[in-house]
Amino acid sequence: MSDITRQLIPDARAFLAELAETNTRDWFQSHKARYDAELRQPAEALLQAVADYLRPHHPGIRGKLFRPQRDLRFSKDKTPYHTHLHLLWQLPQTPGCGVFFGIDPGGVRIGGGIMGLKGTALSRWRDAVAGLPLTRSYPTAGLAQIAGHPSPRDSGFADEMAALMDILALKGFQPKAPELKRVPAPHGQSHPHADLLRRKSLTLWRDVALAPPPDPVAAVCSAALVLTPLFTLLQPILADPVAA
Image (tube, rainbow, N blue to C red; front, side):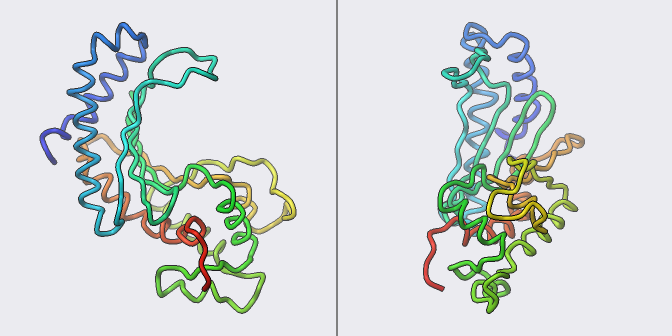
């Protein structure tokens, strides 16, 4: 673990706990140098170290540190700063997918997936879950036959996804709840994969044990590799379709 990332988790949790008690611009500005030294710079080093390690597995990976300022334009809560530190590694080969890392006073979480299925991606997701064949071959040989499945009502995608989510749950990754209360039309409420059809995003999260103190670089890289099958399975949904 590099020296600059070694203290990121305990320092960030302490800083954010103090920020939460006051959360004013005056407090933050008076502690700006501390924020830069203890949160921003170590977080940027973590972004770079993880990207360097994962780049052979995820070409074009890009890291992003979310700004501490909150967008107050449409919020009743006018506290000016987030009381969490969020990092994201974007995976261009699976558009919209990413690896997430978050620190707040209560703990640390690592996750991955897609925050929002929109437009054609949402339509392809629902078609694939409902059983329509995908128009793109899966990028792994073991799954390639699914795209050309002879039955027009059984692509196998939903079974693969449900099984994968069960496996990832055994590894500690739990999905956020579906956004919709009802299965969207024209699919029936008793559809065997109703949970997947009610989703407009798919993110899975795992709490990070803090004893012994974790190596943030190793923790994020390990989680990203565990989640790679999820990114692989989502790739034909999120990438621009091509003829099979």
